[in-house]
Image (tube, rainbow, N blue to C red; front, top):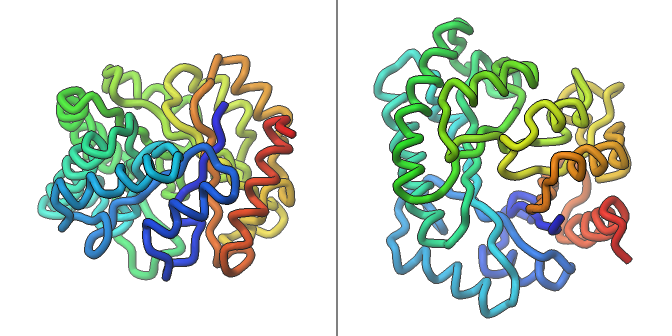
Length: 280
């Protein structure tokens, strides 16, 4: 398995090029960039601007692992509002296009939400309606993903939706596309389950993996902690990934606000991942 880090792990004030440089300095094999609404690498970016990030990574000697986006919290594909659902689908299309330009094979997509506790006044949608909207939308987008040869990785998040590995597995299977799978986040399931169980059940459907750690006793967002400081049983997680033959990137998603400030978390995380993966 290869060692990557998500750009959200860096201070928000850092430019994309600087993040790429620090990731290389910290010993990561790859970095996951993110599509924003405005500014750097955003919905506004044109092809030449996006290609520049690929060029910078090549110059630094580091791979681009995948392309994330946090825009689906604002524009969920499960919204009861048709305009919001269309906006969400348009974002996925732009993300797929950008990923193809960057030369990465997977995008991270949050499949909407039934409700979100940590976003004030977020829309609450009946579970069955959210399911139908998400299934319809992502099934439609699967054809777009295939045209770009870029996979949609559905991330398991705190969205009160697709709450078990069995449900996520069956949701993916209903779409029935080799270009739609799971973007499995290890830390996000710890509050209510065991990531190693999810890995064995989702199996070959897993396109990419996020590494985080979480303390169950804490509850809430402040339960996310540095790698190896929480309740994730990483020896079992690695064993489960090896058992399904996963050899792609494991990508740390460390939010600086949850733990340390500044760039130090990037270097701390690199060392922790070396320990988890058995690297010297």
